[in-house]
Image 1 (tube, helix red, strand yellow):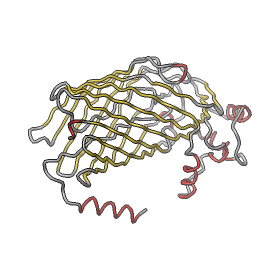
Image 2 (tube, one colour):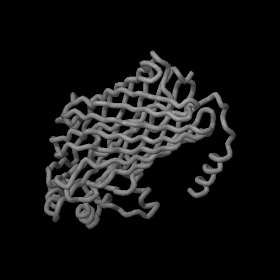
Image 3 (cartoon, helix red, strand yellow):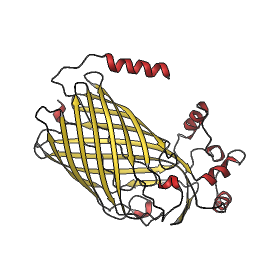
Length: 359
């Protein structure tokens, strides 16, 4: 791993600069927070680095997939004491509910597909519509993640007590109770999002700033965990700086989350989010992108006394942009840091975008 990182660093500082007339920057990853503790809420997504020509459409498709294993401290201790693997069921559910204090267990994988249609109204204004779908269940990544934890000698977190690739969810918090063990999972269409974006450029085109607003419309099925049933609204300010082969990004968003009453009670509140990133041109077609995501939890002390569920969500992502003509392909990995039990263990992002302006 150390040799690989050194080689990557040397490549970043030694490659020649591309031609000056090729801007070649594509912006931050459009993947959103896929935490099961708030994936249904509105989450503002960074826009393209370079808007299209006035009167043209561009299309983005983004696929994200994540694995979540999260437990309260008492549940982790209980699971670590169990011998061998088992299908979690009524006996384990009752044992967890008999543990002292508040407790929870989330064992699932979640995949989401976003289709975004952007329309460039004029040089400064654009509008977009995001249609999304999600599927959740037991998945297939448990074995790989456990092997990685063994390789780096990480804690077991209680994983070896449960059968792999199962879908198990238990919330036993102050605000609500919900349990689903060995469930077949589910999925469907999520609430759509509509938004507007205003963009300005500096005279030398090195600085770019955009302001946008968006609304999530609650038309999906609440009973299938596909909608909160409430309207969310958000505002985002983005700043971009380009210098040679480098681009830096800073996005600050504030979302009014109207809360949720199904499954787990979540109150309405303002959720700030900060995304900062760095993009590096490696070749005329391929860029590296690194970014960090920080956002407030949907839970407050009224819902739980567990500090990790109330803690800030922090995620790091690294990936590659590769463009062929008007086609952009993106691949990235996301890992949570800080409060390890309030965000997915690991996430995979893949994207495809079509923008006629890239010809």
